[in-house]
Image (cartoon, rainbow, N blue to C red; front, top):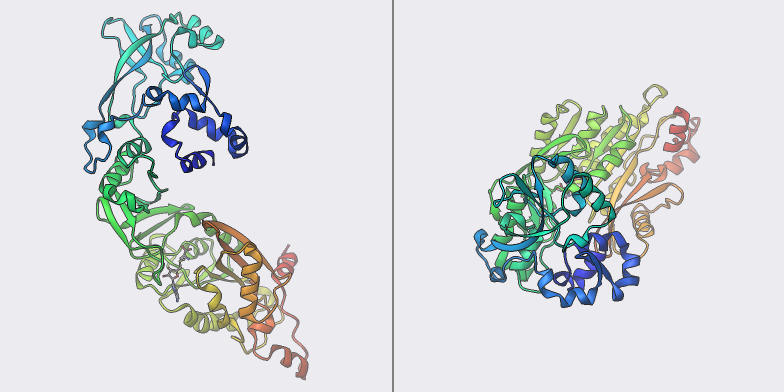
Length: 495
Ligand SMILES: C[S@@+](CC[C@H](N)C(=O)[O-])C[C@H]1O[C@@H](n2cnc3c(N)ncnc32)[C@H](O)[C@@H]1O
């Protein structure tokens, strides 16, 4: 976005906050075209970027005191500062203040935690309406429609100046941190929230300020009572982070709601990613009540529990004993413990044990009365593809006449220019079969520069899943079982 572009170019400190909504509104394309002759609407006129940059006093209007730079222990009182702001004097008795503020709201001061109306100390019968100093310099700053409003409410357009005390409460996180951290360096990294926990990835230059950063985030974000820094990228087998509590409580048991389902878990010991909620919803949306779901890398249950809520039969597995513990907890929490069987084993063992048994049961004896689709979800993107060989020749008994072969949803990262083709080719290489025309690839999200998370969905080909499938079809004296139906055929028949 434009804002990131500006940050990257270190312009962040030299342009006013008022400029940012405008930048965002322009869009990247226009911004690139305009960047050299960039115009900012500020203080009742359009100015060029270079003018903004020269006018130091102006952009510092809302900057905290320079003395806070380098502070490592948060001293909230050091942010007190008095600035001069434009005000209108309004007679209390004559004017419906609520209506007046509503009509002039785009001209009013905008600061976190700041009242827009103050008692006029020099006149008991009046109040002062605080105006936006970026827009209003004098009475001449009002445009036609403002003047109509002022006239309608019989308020004089005469603009007075008022000394206003700004405190720590009136700055946002970014303003505080850019005032405190070394000049010209990145201020914050994006932070994610899991229940009451905020987790961030601090860079080296931010580490001396880590406690302060944590405290500011807690102060400025209602509901966050703990801030943790990830100290490694996810590289543990269980995909959880190592983390250090920077500020707030040590309690890492998070309570979250995703797609209307409650989950509780120890965030320091299991995997959870709030950015996957749409993907969880997408997969569960593919299931019909009475379908069977095998969740090979289930975590604390974000596929398994909503699927069980949808009345699917679910077999969910995770190798991490902590995930297993919280999965069980969440099944009870959401009252689906009767619909889910949970396992704590390696994914391969799960595929070759429980999944094999259940597939044998459902595929060999399936009849038209019990048309259940079988889905296998494998969300362990760094490694799931390598587990697929467990499906090769997994079954021996030929499929029943109306059997629908299972559909696998296998997640994988890709760092190539063509992630969809890359993932498909890698899966085909492991299966030793082409999936051309029998699979779909879904782009889930970008996880890092040039690293995409993809989901390949495919129906396991019969000659992959069954031992001697082709041979048994050729040499059997028995009448040939019908070719197992594809999911598309199955859905078409049902409709
Ligand atoms: C990326 S997480 C996905 C969790 C959950 N399905 C979700 O969407 O949030 C992968 C999960 O696989 C588990 N895991 C890692 N290696 C495993 C293995 N060999 N067998 C089974 N589970 C494994 C981890 O503990 C983790 O919970």
